[in-house]
Structure formats: C-alpha cells, structure tokens
Image (cartoon, rainbow, N blue to C red; front, side, top):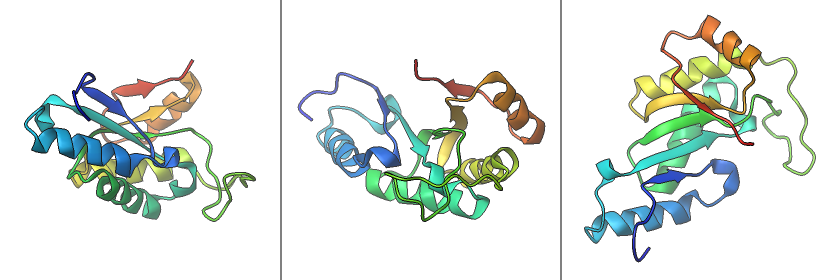
Length: 147
C-alpha cells in the first residue's frame, strides 16, 4: 500500500483476501502512514459458521489473517445458514439452525471478548432485524445492505 486513501476497509472471510488486506494495513501502520485508530475495519462471518460454537473461532481466524487484535465491525454476512461442510459451489442450507438466537449469541460473544468493537448484520430485511432485536442483549446499531 503506497498511500492510504480509504479509512474504511470492508472485507469478509469468503472473499479470501483477508491476509492480503492485513498485510497492506499492517505495512501502512508500520510505515507510519496511518495509525490503527484512524482506520475502520469491517469483516464478516460466513454462512458456514452460524452455530454459536463456530462464531468466535471464525472471528479469531479472520483476525489472524488480518494480523489484527480486533476489528471495528463484525457483521453476519447474509441471513442464510449453510451446513458447515457445504461446498461453496453447491451449498446445502441448514434449515434447522435458529440463526437469530444462535448466531447472534455468538456475535455477542465476539464483542464481549473484545474481538470486535461493534457487531451487526448485513443484507437483512426488516423482519429479520426484528427477529434479532427480540433475542439480542446488546444494542443493534449497524445494518449493512448491498444494493
């Protein structure tokens, strides 16, 4: 990274570029071009890690790839759970998993552990957000939607 032009970096585990993003961010920090607090870094939980016991390990894996201690925002990428061993090119949906209770509890664990300053959802509709609000213990602040 020769010059930091954006202060918000948005990535996700499924993009398979977190390690490259992390190298660029850490190079910019090491060179004095930018400090970590000047950046807002977002990454996202992929659809295979929606059970509560998989959320924290997925966040830790993203942080390892990014070379960071925390992200500013960790999002549930899509409100559609895949079975954990489901291939990307032929996903099997996990229709038995309660993503609103199970996944959101894991997201709150991520924030409680300091792995993310804030947590939120991406690509949720109004009803899905209402479902999360019913089970959450933390305030839901961020909504990310792709048009």
